[in-house]
Length: 327
Image (cartoon, rainbow, N blue to C red):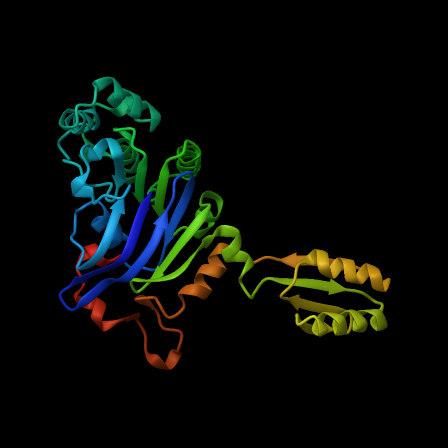
């Protein structure tokens, strides 16, 4: 399990992570989401000892990364797919990693096959496309067969087949009982992959919930009821309002209901003898829910106010932030 407690990381005057706390448990894929500058990559770097916390703790199985006896066998991480010597072949890169952790060459060949690089294992990493580099980075993360896995933007550069492959891989790793934390800006893919979501903005926790809890809690979720039977539709509206649900009259024949589930609306309509032409549930997407949550937490974005001038809107404190604080 991963345990982040009151984690704060500052780079000079810039606070990249601000009193952040959350857990990542085994057996599920946990998505780690947030705008650029939210502190995702910084949190992962602190977790595996590449940066030191200003305050707080980031523990893996109750220990700091530097205290792990065999870190490659306990934690696998892909934080930068291009962090490979460009002159080394894919196999040589993995063999060097394996040698430092007493891992067999047989395991090197296994992970090369697992990520689909067996046929190009002799090519220099510097000639790889971004998608191939991602696969090599994933192979490195899997090399020690670890129980804890961290992936920062693993779908970058992958084609649709590769994206589906990494989705299936992440879910299969979690199904084996491993702890899987993955960051991404691709909301549609996260909705298909993650079981639980950690959302951060400007270094602070915005949400820690299951996928269903997060989306179902969005106020944009609504039930539409349409009927030509105006008297009974009016009675349904009054009953729902009396039950403290939000009801809006869209037209004389259509209601929009928020704050209940479709079964309760259907049961009450049946009890009233209401003739229904439509009863539907409009469920928000993860993308819309994410956008609603992170409004006001975006470091870089296009200004919506046409009078505010052209060009990107930036937050001045982030201008001096180092590259490691960018996500």
